Image 1 (cartoon, rainbow, N blue to C red):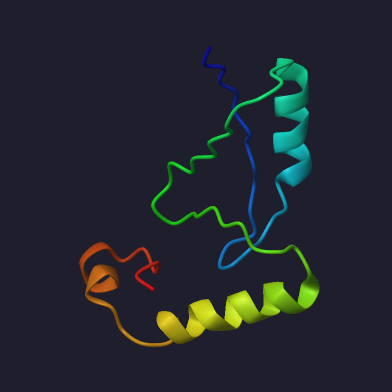
Image 2 (spheres, rainbow, N blue to C red; image 1 turned 45 degrees about the vertical axis):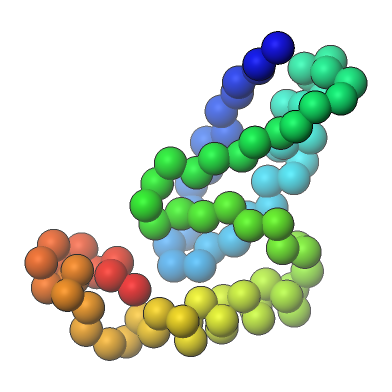
Length: 88
């Protein structure tokens, strides 16, 4: 059996982190499935899903790590081509 549902969110932009655990648990709970797997998929190219602990210190560490991996204050070829400012 395969069940599908959708979670819609509004974000505040760069590195806005939201805990979707309660929403996923509610969907799983209403399904009445006793054993199985939940797959969470984010279709956007600038969004992501992670299984990080939702704790303030860890969340700040994640934001800093993302900034170190792809600094937001340097030029990117993507931005030059598309002008959308999300190259990082």
